[in-house]
Amino acid sequence: MITTLAMSGYRSLRDLVVPLGRLTLVTGANGSGKTSLYRSLRLLAEIAQGRLIGSLAAEGGLSSTLWAGPEAITRAMRTGRQPIQGTPRTQPVGLKLGFGGEAFGYAIDLGLPSPENPFPLDPAIKLEAMWTGEVLTRASQFAERRNGLVRLRTTATGEWREAMEGLSPFDSMVTHCADPGDGYELLALRERMRDWRFYDALRTDPDAPARRPQVMTYTPVLAGDGADLAAAIATILAIGDGAALGEAIEQAFPGSRLSVEETGLRLGQHGLLRPLGAAELSDGTLRYLLLAAALLSPRPPELMVLNEPEASLHPSLMPSLARLLTMASVEAQIVVVSHSEALISALREEGGMAEIRLEKQFGETDAPEVERPVWIWPKR
Image (cartoon, rainbow, N blue to C red; front, top):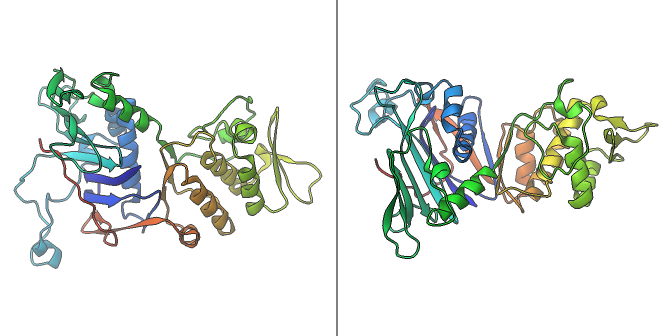
């Protein structure tokens, strides 16, 4: 389980380190930095897929994603005795992301490319580090990448050896130095990060993929766009917790019954002479079914992140959604980004939730109500 998430130099996240629990709610006013925190988790996941540089390019390149304020906001600036202005830099320009967990920790430091690079908007990976446990120490570190040189600590002797030289500044050691031998820990981390799931594109409009006819096939994991909803529900009913799914439907839509036919899913509702297909369902009903299929997956991930899952849902459905989220957090670590007061209240009533309320001051995102965990960035 990830216990600490750290971000530095990314958009409004000048220097933010927060704790994560089994079920964590990230909330705050519009513009407080919720989306930036969500994106930082996605960027960490993209490292294991080899898509980090491309993802940052899609956001406008490194220059568009870097913290736009001064390197440090002094007390004089905060009290108004001094205007907000740039100060002499003490650290190199960088965008840093990392996490610490019960098993492994990882951090990456991205900086400006060399002048001769033909793609000046692309960041260069300057440094990576991996260690055992939550906090980086000299004794716990077992993998290090500095510019193009990668070193791994030999498992048997504890000595360092050079694993690769000349690694491209666009490639991560997580994807290029993982092997079943001395790079086994890198391999294990890569596979765990590849298993993280993100749901922020579950469409419910008339042309949504979930409304189209589907082929029924074994589908233990709902796709990110919900295109295989019917097959995912059929899989839950066949090999998953069909009773929990039925209970979730009954709690949300009393008297309704969910089933799957060759042509797709069907929802029978009290008072209707025939069940409704996916194309006939309201946006809110379809959205709830998509979330239920994601959260009740027969193959739960290590980490699942949901961005504003309450979209299209009536406030009356929030208690049912909160119960689903709480139930899913038993098998998978869940991070929910939301500003819905109805969902926040329902999650609080369920209990067992960690809450991170973000605020923005002087353009910088902060979490003043949580205690900052111990965190050490690797140094260039």
